[in-house]
Image 1 (cartoon, one colour):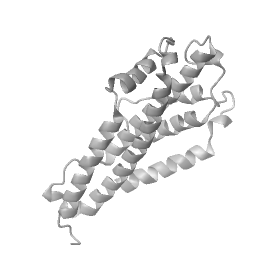
Image 2: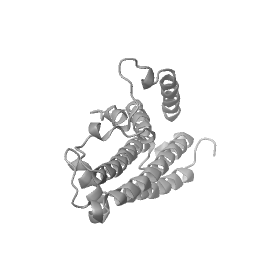
Image 3: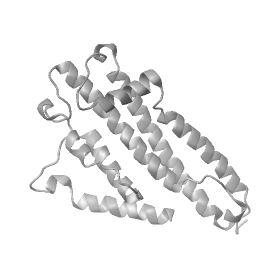
Image 4: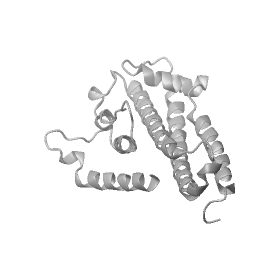
Length: 208
């Protein structure tokens, strides 16, 4: 299953390279806000859906911001625009973290039962993939923390931006409240993963 999903990911990446959004013709996509609008959460999210979302979100990180006239919030001053950019970058990184957590949990294992012994190596490979995704999520969470800190600088505290109040709330929960903390979640998941890996390694598989 793990190998199949990796192959699917490679095929998806190859297909994307053959058809870039810039070649769509009638609608040229080039700004962060446009790429962000291509991100969407499915009711039942499969690995392919998650990989697609990561693709759009990572393009959003690399692209330029559109003119403030077309921002996702009403912008009237340069300071408001600066805060908007910080919040946008924070939010995109949070969404990427969530997508990598979705992927990691597709491969993660919570228990190593004795009857899993015949598939010991497959389970260990699956845990290795999950660990890599958790580590990538950890990197993006660090980026989200950095941007949230910039958005919560004292000079911005009373410069509220309409339409993106949820982003404002995310920054507040990260910096002041500490109630939004994917870093803690990732650390807990990695600790559990390492424990389960040791349990699988202790099992006597068919080649032991």
